[in-house]
Image 1 (cartoon, one colour):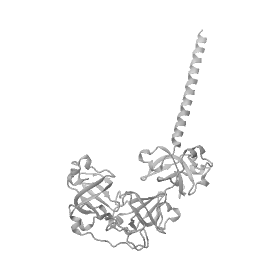
Image 2 (image 1 turned 60 degrees about the vertical axis):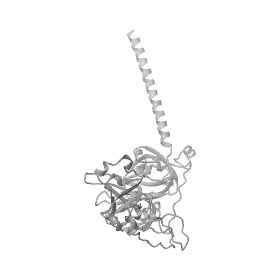
Image 3 (image 1 turned 180 degrees about the vertical axis):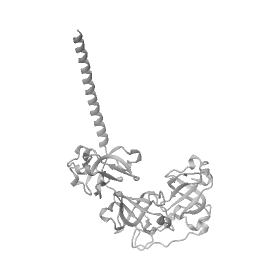
Image 4 (image 1 turned 90 degrees about the vertical axis):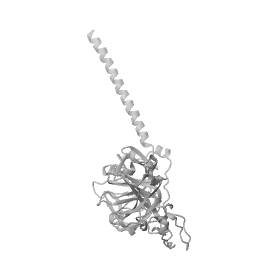
Length: 402
C-alpha cells in the first residue's frame, strides 16, 4: 500500500515538473521571438537620443566610410547614414573578424545594423554585439530578405553644394591625417571648454557624417562670434585623431568663417545680407562675387533702448551701454555658486551672445521667464565683455520679455 501511494505521488510530481519545464521553454521561446522582432524593426537615426542609451536598436542605411583601427585595442568604425542623420557604428575586432560579409562593407554599401546605443564623449554610437547583427540590404550573405522587403529603402539626403576644393564633414577620412583641409558644414552642437586646458568643440555635420572641430582659448578669445546649432561654417584645420575619432584642429580664429546660405547670386551682383548678418565676417558662396562692403552701425542706433538688436549685430562699440537683444535660446549654463551667474546663449543664426543674471534675479523669475532651449526671448541690460566675449548683464526680472 505504501509503495503504491509513493509511486502515485512520484508520478504526479514528475508530471508537474515536466509541465513546468515545457511552460518555461515556451515562455522563453515566445519572449525571445518578441525581443528579436522588436530589435529587427528599423528606426530613423535621428530618433536615437540619450534616453535610448543601453537599449538595442536596428538602423538601416548607406555606409559612408569604414575606418580600420589604428591599434590592436581599438575598434573598427563604420559611418552609416540614412535620410535623417548619420551615426558611428562600433565593431570590435573579434566581431569584425567573425563577419562573413566584411569584404562587402565598403562605401555606398547598404546594410542593416542591430546594436546597443552608447554615449562616447558626448556622441551617440551603436555598438555591434555579434557578427550576425550586420546584414546586407540586398539579400546577400548574412542578410534577412524578409526584413529588406518590410523596410523601405533609405535614400541619402543630398549633400549641400560647396565651392571646389572644400570638403564636407563626411568626406574627411583617415587618409588625410596630418593634412590641412577646409571643411564646410552645419553646426550640430557647440561645447565650451570645460577647463583652461580643455578645447572648445564644434560638431560639424552634413548628410554623410559628423566631424568634430576643436580649438583652444587663444582662438576663442579672438573669434568674433560663438558657433550655434544651425549655422553654416567653413573651417580650415589639420586633420588629427583623438581616441579613434577623426577631428579638425584649428590654429587661428581667421580659419573659422560663417557662410551665408541662400540663393545663388548672379555674377556681378552683390549678395543680399540680412540685417542680422550685417557687420559679420560672412562670405558669399559664389566665388566670383565680391563681398559687400561692411557698413558700420551708428552708435546712436545701437544704444537706443527702443531698438531691438539681433545677437549678430551687437558690437564692442556698445560696451558699457544698455542694449536690448532678441534671439533664440541655444544653450543654458546654470549658476554653480552664489557669486556665479546663470549664463544663457541666444542666437539669430548669424551670431550668438550670452546674457547673464545672478541667483537673486533667478529666484524672482516667473515660469514664463525661465530660459528654455529653442525659445525666443528678448533681454535688456548693460553690455559688458568677459574673457574676450560680449555679454548682456540682466539686473532685474522685468528686463526679460518675449
